Image 1 (cartoon, helix red, strand yellow):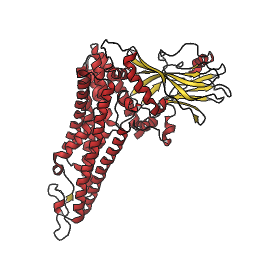
Image 2 (cartoon, rainbow, N blue to C red):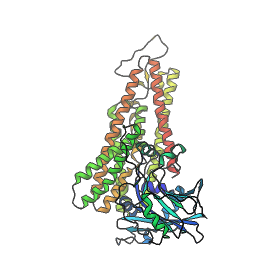
Image 3 (cartoon, one colour):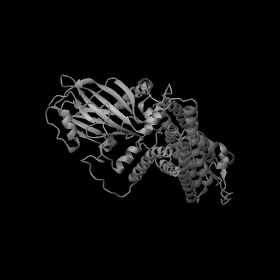
Image 4 (cartoon, helix red, strand yellow):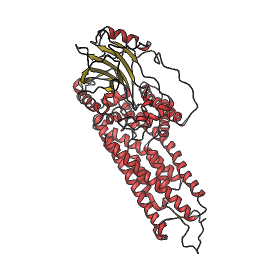
Length: 544
């Protein structure tokens, strides 16, 4: 299993291939660059502290003896799963000199520990080939697709261990992305393993990097790296990073540039949705903790509802499938709104059912919950393909009927009987398109099930976190309020889809034959799009 599959659920969310890839995991990273007695870099030693929500979800079911604590042995399966899977993503660690990029051997000395309410993953990453260079060596720790947000807790989070006295270290903490870069990276699916060449420049700035100069031109020390430089020159003897340093009080790196206000573009809109969703998501855990301590439910409820709205406003396969289905097969706004609401609440029901059965009744691990949710995801994507093929088959029959003029081979769509028959013509000018009545309930049910059986991903984590806080009822309420917000947004999009189709029908009503051909072509494209989307999603899911 690739690490992204774990990140997609154990690391906080099971996002679809088309889902918004804004950070769902927050990691405080500390790294040690280890030298041997020949002055060569031989390993990178990492210490990654995960956010509280991830930590609680990942710990689900791992307390085998139910003593309220987690031993190294109990955490070992999760630690092993993490480090074995990291290789598919180059360990989010990039060590390079010019065009040369170092490779890595299997991780060593890995283990997880619980520091308060947050998990820390420790592991040593040996280089496949130790190397020394008099040129500047660059170390970067980041996720190029920005699905996991790495940050340095302070200037001393990167250190050199047993480095030659001449080595100088300069640290550059990650900087905030521009609206356009954030929006572009957010559109990349979690199954994509490499950043497209034309988007690599956008990722500049999200990496936490360090320059190591051990000979030629020493890097000039920026203010953000002065403390780390002193530690490096001391040979790394100021202590290890087994216990991560506290977060810096500085809100931004010293060399960060103030953001400039710009007119809101489409990319800026998506970036703003991204920022809102991230903020609401993190506020959910704070609201659940506050509720446990006697806080009011209205805060949690309001955040859950708003999270559902902004979550649905970003890219995602559910709203795309429903909207495309409505273009291909529906003509009534009320039916489209009903489909949107039922599908959203079905996702919430599935999420509550999975956590209720697996976490409460069976006390299974987060890894087992991940595998189960993954199976639902694969099933959802397979049903999307089936829905697309079903629609293509119906449209194919309509195409044949239109081509042959066989009135019995297609479904006539009468709009208050306002069409006209030219009895002297060879072709009847009925609108050739399956209607809601023609497709019956089967098409709507197929659309609902294909979207609804995939559990609401954010709800999985919220439910487990609520369970750990002893307020599972609040987690259930939060889940359904998220579903309500999602349903409203998707219903608006569904109404727009049906309205756009109706507008297109009115604009093409002049010539019955031409109108039928244009509308049927539009519906065929929508059905083909659903099929292609399902194939892409399923292939992505099966390879993660």
